[in-house]
Image 1 (cartoon, one colour):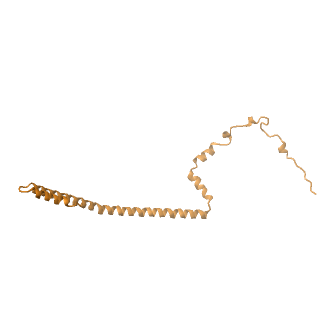
Image 2 (cartoon, rainbow, N blue to C red; image 1 turned 135 degrees about the horizontal axis):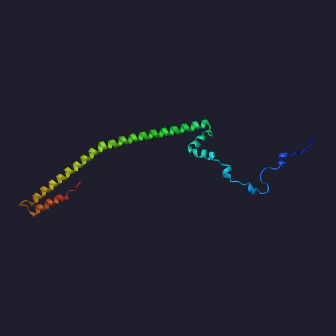
Image 3 (tube, rainbow, N blue to C red; image 1 turned 180 degrees about the vertical axis):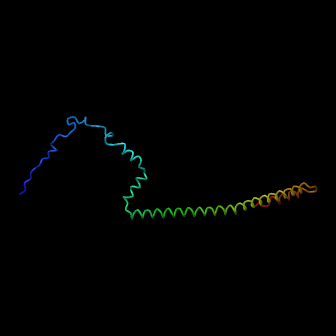
Length: 152
């Protein structure tokens, strides 16, 4: 049979350096020993883009190429749709200006001509009403004719 023998390590039994009775004396400020200025400056200089770029090793190359292709095709689709919509807006706006402005000017001129004709008719009626030899019946008849017409 096998017999087990305990072997003692001499390094464990030896006294370790440092205060043993009063452990509070051994406490030191952790900032002075553990962290150094070199480590802080590295993390301060590292940007979010650097950290994101370092994550590329986590994603397998096949997945990276798939994601890259999808993002590229989506951005190309968005870019082409924005360019196309810009061209459509340009065509529509210039067409409206080329057709709409002359139409608006012609419409305003037509309204002005109609107002001038209306004013001329009113002057003619006023001249006939005030002319000598007219009777009250003819005046009321002419006024009744004018009031009976609907205005468009």
